[in-house]
Every structure is written in C-alpha cells, then in structure tokens.
Length: 248
Image (tube, rainbow, N blue to C red; front, side, top):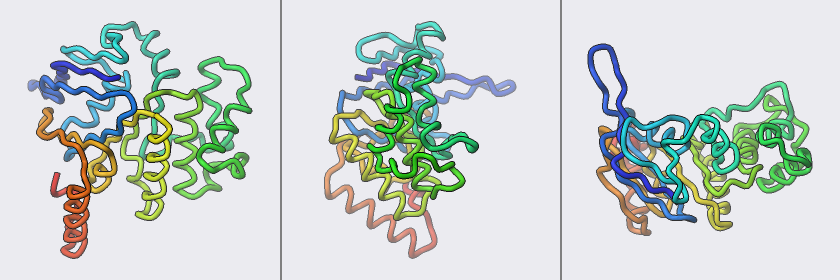
C-alpha cells in the first residue's frame, strides 16, 4: 500500500538546514499494523505528515497504492486525504460547540456525500458510542472523545488510518481500551500506521519502525518476547521514576 523510496525532507532554520528525513526507505503492505517510534526530533512526525499527504518531500518518491502522490496537485492531495486516509490526533481536534454526531459528520460534508447523519451514526456505533451521539465534547470523557475522533476518521471508510500519539492524553486504562479498538479495526482489514514515542505502545503493532535523526535505525516484527522485554523496561522505569521513552 505504501512505498517510500529515498524520501528526504529539509527545513531551512535561519542559516542552517535541518534534515528532518534523510533518504528514508519504507514499505507497508495493505492490512498491516505498523508503529513508527522515536524520541522528539527523530523524524517520526515528519514521516506521518508525508504519509498523510499533509506535506511534500524535498526529494524522493512516495507511492500510495502504486500511485505517485508526492507530485500531485494540492487539489488531488486534498481528495486523497478526505477519502483514502483517516486521521486520529493526540488532542482529538473536535469542534467543542457541536455534538459527537455532528463532529463525525464533518468529513462527509467535505466529501459531499449523501446520507450524512446515517453514515455518522453508523460510524459512532462502530466505536461503541451511538448512545452518546448528541453529547458535546465537554460532556464526554477523554476516552469517549478519542472514540469520537476515531469514528470521524473512519466515517468515509478509508483503507488507511494514521494515528499520531492517540493515547498521549489518556490514562493508562483508557489508553489500553483505545489500543484494543485499533486491534479490532486491524482485524477488520484497516491498515494502521501509529506514531508514538512510547515503545510499550509501539509494541502493540505487528511491526515497529524506530527512527533517529531522520533515518530508520530498526524495522522489526513484534513477537511475544519483544513485548515482554518492553513491558519489563516500562515497569523498571516506573519504579525508578524514569520513562519508557528513555529507551527510544
């Protein structure tokens, strides 16, 4: 589904040039659940923006379903974002004055689809929130707000879901519930790319891509032994007052 070859992204910072991505190669198959992880400044967020067609690379190639998208017009990129990719953000990005149902309906309105309310209600039902359809974000818990955000991301039935620190603003128990929802979506065939700085969260995926200084330093499949290793590191960090992110 995703083929990235020699992708480079440069930013001009005063008199210096920052290489946010430095010739990265990455292939993701349809139906995979992949996490991209690394410390702040590693390039993972830049990678997410490029995969999501929110930004353009300085050089290199990005093919999405065998279509070269890095050279498309802004209008065609917007069309891909609205129909092919669902986005989930750490801060939920919900409209505070509108109901859960109306928040979920926003992508449908932009895509000019019919049956807006029915599709939005079906998407809320998919994440277990149909009974909260008419509640505003301020009337929902953090976990419920993230479920609304996921329902909004799924309402156009995109084959690709991008999640940027989706558990970052949630307590551990609620975060586990959101991750289980991602597992359910993956079992339904949705391709998921999750960006996180927490290795224990990253290990929930089938595959972990670890970045540092704009390059990929590790790309490995997740097995049970690896999960247990990361869980042990997290517990050690909690007892010592450290953080899992230190491992990244």
